[in-house]
Amino acid sequence: MAAATLVVSLLMSGLTFWAVNTIQQDAHLNDTRFGRDLGLLLAANVAPLVAEDHRTELAQFTHRFYSSTSSVRYMLYADADGEIFLGIPFSESEVQNSLTIRRRIQLPDNFAEKAELPMVRQHLTPAGEVTDVFIPLNHEGQYLGVLAVGINPNPTLMISSHLTRDVTTAVFVSIWVMMILGAVFNALTITKPIKELLVGVKNIAAGNFKQRIDLPLGGELGELICSFNDMAERLKRYEEQNIEELTSEKAKLETLMATIADGAMLIDIHQQIILVNPIARRIFGWETQEILGQNLLQHLSPTVQKELQQPLCDMITGKLEGAEFRLTLEEPLNRTVRLLLMTVLDQHRESTKGIAITVQDITREAELNEAKSQFISNVSHELRTPLFNIKSFIETLHEYGDDLSESERLEFLETANRETDRLTRLVNDVLDLSRLESCKRYNFEAVDVSATVEQTLRSNQLNAKDKGIELCQELEPHLPPILGNYDLLLQVFANLVGNALKFTQSGGRVVIRASLLPLSSPVDPGRLRIEIADTGIGIDPEDQEAIFDRFFRVENRVHTLEGTGLGLSIVRNIMEKHHSQVHLVSEVSVGTTFWFDLPVFRETATPLEPLIPEVLTLPPSSILMSTL
Image (cartoon, rainbow, N blue to C red; front, side, top):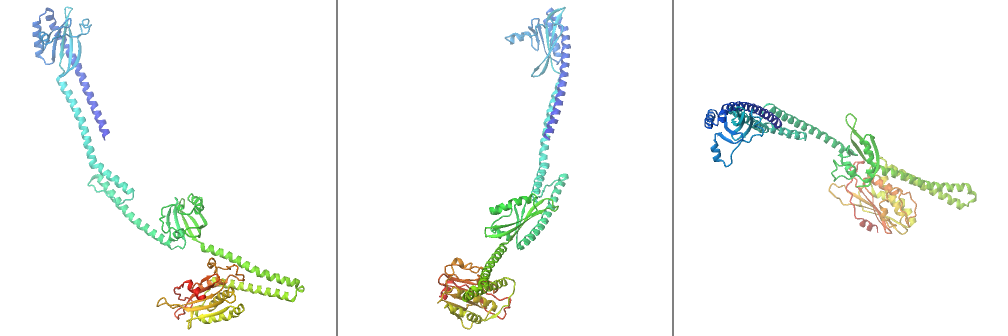
């Protein structure tokens, strides 16, 4: 607007000044013609007077002519040398008296030679521009001097010129005043609403749909503001509806992910975590960390980063659709996990939007596979030794039987028989352990502990007597029956007592104890603690944690007896079937005590679902002292 105003004002001013200049040029031309004609007329009338030197008459004529017109500013008479001798409105005497220097008209050098033509010029005075006309005075071919006449400008022309200039200035100022007023009005009535609209649009673009514009305007601008407010209100309703739907879908998705047994994560194409369920947090140790919106690789160990970095980049770029990895995590716990990666595509299945990661904790599976391999290796080794011995002795008897003495043949047969028994025990223990680790269900009923202990003592009394070991029982009187399986408990007693006799030297003592523990609450059905204690060689502390593993046998300077290494593993599995645990307290060269708790039988307890109360663990020292 300012530029347009400036152009218009300059154009109007230019046109006005052009018109004024044109008028002034015409006025100068007219003044020049008028002055020349007037000068020639005066020169023709005053030339005879000047020639005859009638200065009084010349002065009277000049005064009459000067008084009769307002167009003449001055009239000066000069001789051939340029000396002024008469002038209106001043005379020669006045000039000579008032000036110390005599006045003269300075004319061009060749003016006398061109005495036939008048000379015209203009000069500015405080009263305006004056046209000077210099007319030579000639009489009868003689050059007498010069007549100088000053012609005033045309007053009408001056007034119109001044009026035009004033009008032009007024128009120029008016245009700029109107432009300024228009700009102020525009700022108050148009610019402010436009700025409000601009701020509102920016807020809407930023997601602030609560923005409203309240300006009392009408017309098209008012309709625009009303439309903007209506648009903002609709966007707000859409946002609320979309947020509610998105919140609902997110809650469903989070609930679904929280119920998944495996860990689950979702990352975007920048490898930033969008969603993660509690299982994945627990596996990677992120329970106390805020990882949403952060890069996944930054929260993984360097080993895992090295494994996943390239596959993730290939999946994001579309080179891979899925991948599977088996990794070992050392922090926060030593775990073996399987990672399943799958790309998440858009609805047109053209571009990758993210990657879904499923984290499966296969630590137990890896341990079972390792245990399975170790079990097969151990069983193969344990079977190979007796089979090799049996085959060797039988081949020796077959090939060299006639060359052997009777006692040697009997010794070979006894050794083969002993290895056969050892092989039988190994196979039976393996079958028992496999049966216990299967999903087979056992019937639980009331079992008399006293009868089980007595049968165990009868079975092992002869072996204890041969080794010179005291085998006895210490049972509280009137013990209630327990809830359990008789055959399984009998096997537990047999294995524990057998191990105690095996690792106790002659003169030692093996005791089976049973006592009723105090009730922990009024609804507690009661528990019975059973202990098998011996004064044998004991077990080193570093071996006590692994003593229940399959095929584990303590090999030290005292232990030279043979065994399958499955007895305590069978005991542990039987206790797990009874929803209990077997514990031990041992000291090298002092003795060992194995103990466990079993619930007292109640009539309301179902055979398959025994009511197992909380296990009461006594200090190990009290059990060990009871052994001694």
